[in-house]
Amino acid sequence: MEQVIPQSQTGRNAAASRRMGWFMAVILALVLGAAATLAWFNINMAETALKRDVERHLQLTAQEKANELSLWFNSLQSQTTRLISADLFRLFASEVNELGSDIGPLLKASGEGASGGGDDTSQLASQLPLMRNLLQEFVSYSGFLSGRLTNADGQTYLSTEVTPPSLSLEQKQAVRDTIQKGVIGILPVRKASSGLVMDMVVPIFAPQYVENRSDQAVATLMLSVMVTSRLGETIESAKAGSSFGETRVFQIVDGTLQDLLPLSAEIRPVPAWKLEDASVLPFEIREGIVSHEKVYSLGVKVPELPWIVVEDVAVDNALKPFWGKRNEILIWAVISVVVVLLALLAVWWWLVGRSARSVNAELLHLYQVSSQQKQLLDGKAIIADVELADGRKSKAFVQIDPGTKQVMYVPTPIIGRNLQVLSEELHLDATEVRSIQQGNLQTLVVDNNPVTVGIDLNAKTAIRLCPGDERKWREQSKREWDKYTFGCYGCWVMDDDGNLDYVPEEDYSEELWNEQKKSGERNRASALHK
View 1 (cartoon, rainbow, N blue to C red):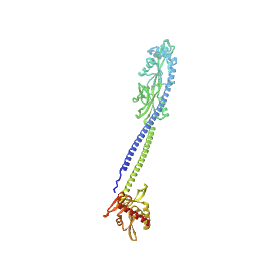
View 2 (tube, rainbow, N blue to C red):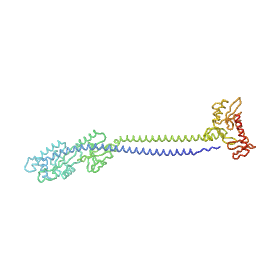
View 3 (cartoon, rainbow, N blue to C red):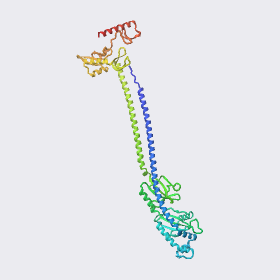
View 4 (tube, helix red, strand yellow):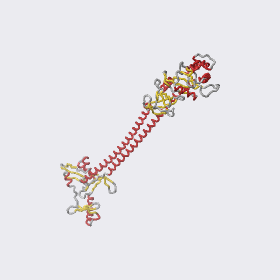
C-alpha cells in the first residue's frame, strides 16, 4: 500500500507566513513613517517655539535699552530747549543775525574789549562775555563737552572753547539743514581723543516781538556730548540684567550701519547687516560681528536718534535647550519604534512557531500513518480509529488479512481483556504487553521451550501463540480456509488449487445458500456448547 504525502497544507502555511511577513513589513514601514513624521513635527514645533522665545527675549531687552537711551536724549533735549527758549539768547541771536554774514567786526570789537559804544556792533560785542558765561554754565551743568553759537552760514561767534576748531563740512551741512528745516539735527557719532562724541545742532528762533520776524531759524546752538559713558552704562546694565546675549549699539549713516562698540575701538561699518525700511533690523540669523559665528539678532531703533540697539546671541547657545528637547523626542521615537518592532517580532515568532508546530504535527501524523501502513503491509496489527456500524468512532486493532488482503478490525477492549488474561498466565510485564499491543511479536520461554505470542485477528481470541521463534509464528500465520468461508456480504470460495474467489451475496447459487445455512447451524451449536 503506497502512501502519498500531501503538500497543500504545508504550502498554504508557507504562503500564509509570507503574507503575514509582508503585512508586518508594511505595518513596520507605516510605524516608522508615523514615528518619523511625528518626531519631525514635534522637533519643528519645539524649534519654532524656542525661536519665538529667543526673538521675544531679544526684543524685550533691546526695547528696554532703546527706551533708556531715548530717555537720556530727551533729558538733554529738554535742558537745551530751556536754554534756547530764553528771550535773552533768542534776542541776542536775532540781533547778530541782522549783521549778516560778516561777523568780523563783532569778533574784532569783542577782542578790543568794547564797552558799550554807540553802534549796534559794539553793543553786541559787549554782551558776548555775559552770553559766553551763560553758555559755559549751561554746558558744564548739563554735562556737555562744548557748545557754540553759529549764524546761518555756519560761522561761529560764541563758543565755550577759547579757540574753537573749524566746523567740518559735515557740521556745516548740518547747520544749514537745521536753519532750513527748523528741527534738531543729530550728527553721526565721531571718534575723539577723549572717546565717542555726538554733535547735536539746535535751531534758535527770533522772539515773537521782533519786527520783521521770520519763521526761519536765525542761529544754531551746536552742542557736543560725550556718549562713551552713556553707551557703556547701557552695555553694562544689559550684562548685569541678563547673560543671554550681547548688546550692541549701531548708528545709521546714509542707510548703512556702523558699530559703536567696543568703546575703545574705532567706529567700523557693518556691511553684512542690512536695514529694512531704513530703520528696521528684523530678527534673523546673521554673521557675528566679532567671532563671525552664526547669531540670532534683531535691532530696535532709538526714538529721535539715528541709533539702533542690537541684541544678538550665538545660535548654538540659543538652541542648547532645543538640542536636549530634540534628543528627547528622538529617543522616544526610537523607543516607540523598537517597542513596535519587538511586538511585531513577537507576533511573527508566535505565528512562525504556530505554523512550524502545525507542519511538525502534520509531518508527525504522516510519519505515523506511513509507519502504520508499513506495519499493516508487514502483517502487524495496529491501533487506529474506526467507524462502527452505528456511526460511532472507536479504537480498534486493525490488521490486513494476508489471504484476502482485506482490512480486519477488533475493538481494543476485547483484545485488551484477552491480553490481560494472557499476561497473568505467562507473567508478562508491562513492557512486553505494550510491545504486543503495538503489533510486535514477543518470544517467551515456557517450560524451557520458546513460545512466540502476537496479535492475529484471524485467531478466535485475536491472540495467537506458536511454539518456536518469530519465524515459526509467521510461517503459521497463514489462515486455514474452508472451502466456503462466509462474510457479512459475500462468501470466499476455495477451488481445488487453493485459490480464493469472492462471491457477493446477490450472486449466491443454491449450493451456497445451503452451505450458509449449514454454517449458521454449526455456529449456533458451537455457541450452545460454550
